[in-house]
Image 1 (spheres, rainbow, N blue to C red):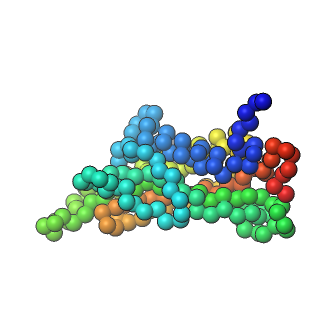
Image 2: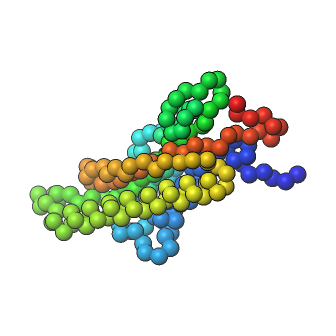
Image 3: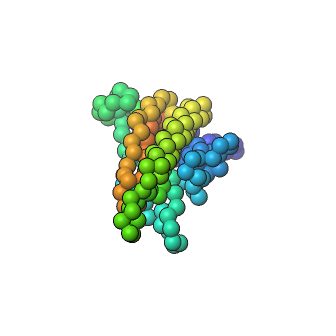
Length: 192
């Protein structure tokens, strides 16, 4: 018996998240061409829940490390994509809202009260903008790959938002809303 791709059995949520993690790795962990302005990150983490704790940035070692993540923010069923219009019964489109982000160590006032230089602040701002471009590209690539593989039918890339600097961290995140393909069960039972 031939092995069927997981997304044909209704696991399109997992398949899309996997595509996004791979696209994030291509941009932030092991990029072809020019490295990220803020440096490569050690890994892209898949985090559960809406709030991403930045605990991994300090890890077990002294100093601060950069961190990249992917997390599912919401999932719903709708009769109109990308809106949240409840369908009748179990029909409609399955919609997934996924976030990707990057957090980096920020310039801070030193222990002696010295504020960061304008050059350091500008470098931090430019790093954030480079990360924003890479996040957008990762979201686009993941959506195109998932569409080509039949995992999603449509998508909308949402706005990028910066966070911080706060607590020694500056970050940016962006999300994508995707219309998942209809679930197909191996015995021919659909998600409707």
